[in-house]
Length: 387
Image (tube, rainbow, N blue to C red; front, side, top):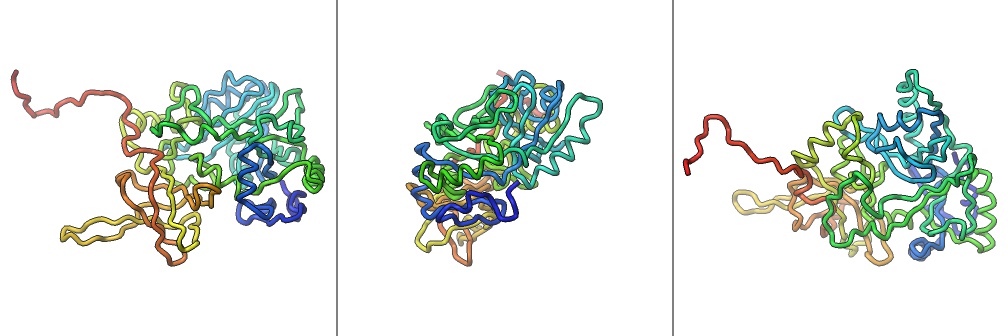
């Protein structure tokens, strides 16, 4: 993990340290808007060395992980990227992991705060299988980029078993076995060409020197978050709470294989997708920036409803999960709101005692789910007219 003094890249001129789960790396390096442009153009890197890396080795590793999680992993080829979810027995999301295998070891990339809990749970589930679980966070640091070829930026991926460890986010399309609820003509995730490169942790000092000399551009977490939100890309540390099921975040696109064998929580995944509707839905909010207040994670989202007498009443309908200032879109946020809230409703966010108007952009529509075309049978005792 990062040292008590933080990542070496915090010593680049202009670096401002992030707080919360980003502590130890830079929130920005002086100009988040320019950093967004550089990052989107594939000309910059983001220090994610505060993230965790868990290694799973042994001949049973892929079949074992496949039996536990939502993605089809049994035939995962070396160097191919995917992601998977661990659910509880009721289908609620517990862990989200980026996955890459090098033919000898499978690497799970996730939030560092979640790694100890995941590792402890996996250890309990080993039984007699030939698997070994190792915390690799001290060995490898994660560096993010949108460069098509990270080597062009001077990044040298670790390759302990001959396969470069570069995880390429599958969010730019719908993965095999996945399903997309968003019905936008062009999904904004199509331009989210994100990669995470595992480098030896000792290489961070060299990246700091390269950044100081101007041979590599750096961007902070604020730039990464703004582009991620605009791409509708969910993140476990922000969009997930104790009630989240994957359907609410449109995470069936890339993290759930709907035709694989049994795993914990599969019954809920199948039932909601085929017969029901997720109780909440993810939306992108375009925020009124008149008051220069940017909501934060956990701020309540409200909507107006009409009382029987015709008078309006403002009621809470959800919460902000992520927010950012985008270089083109202005202040934006992701929020999880009740499914019943009409897509045309103007919403309001309460933050710092100020009510901020917000226009919805639908990600998960109210109609999400119920994809199985099953005819409804008449209830017993009800007669149907003769024809």
